[in-house]
View 1 (cartoon, rainbow, N blue to C red):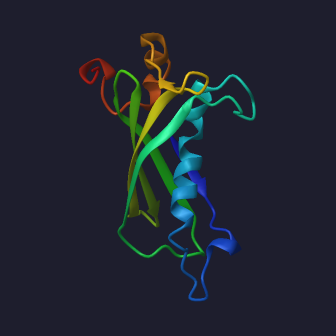
View 2: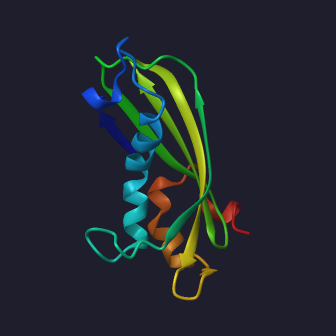
Length: 136
């Protein structure tokens, strides 16, 4: 999945660089289409995913005056978790990469929930590789 971000004034420092706190927000926006598969409401108030782990590598400066392309893919999907990889590009150059693990969660019972095979098939457009090879 690919989205385009135009850096906002509030995300820029006095030197014209995008602050490092903007990238996690952009990556979260890039994951929104995946979130929609785990919610039945428009505002996602019943989202059944929680963030377990998050990691970002900042590779180059991000300039305020150019759009940023965010690519999002599911790297691995297991019994109850999804590993998502993301890449930010500006002017054709990779400027940041990120990986996160999200867990399908039942908030009522405070436990993880299995991701059904039907749900995995629905998510297949986001997969890097066939989920059947990663099922644990």
